[in-house]
Length: 222
Image (cartoon, rainbow, N blue to C red; front, side, top):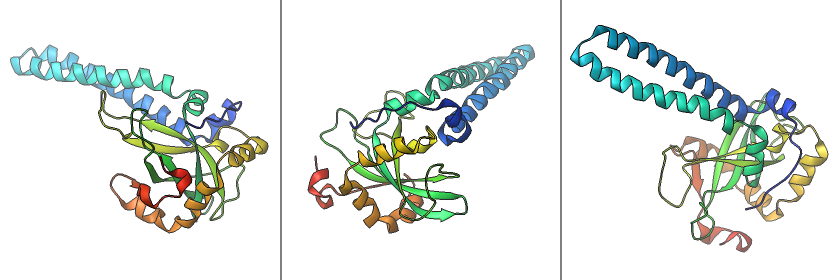
């Protein structure tokens, strides 16, 4: 896995990093849901009917799950940890929309136990890209954020992989340029040649488009 080390600017990341903002919202929702379900449990116990106790058990389980999400999210939301754990990947602006843009990224969905890489195209809509020109074809180095939604899930592929721009973690243009230069030219060219697939990727349910290994450049075959 290709890592990229740099000093994360936490203040900058808190202001612009949309992944961190999403995780913060998830934390608030988790804690809020736990409180509501906890109050519902207390009410059902107060009702003191057989059916209310059955519902109370379900409410307790839901409250425990929501509380776990709320408490676990801050640990995951540490932006420096997210950047350290991710793999450096290329992303290219495929569409512009005022100050925002749509990125098309090349990611490896394979888990460590898989037999070789499984490349796919994924998209991400961003509101801002500090340090970049918002134009089609702009090269945006990023890192992957990998998630398995189901605990103990099986299979060789990650359920969800998204791209988080390096520019959301630093103001230093030299860092962005260094990350860009560490990505092979063949990867940038593959994205540039497939910009027209961005709309197709956004329309599929899985939000990703697996690439045929036989059609990849030799340098990307496992």
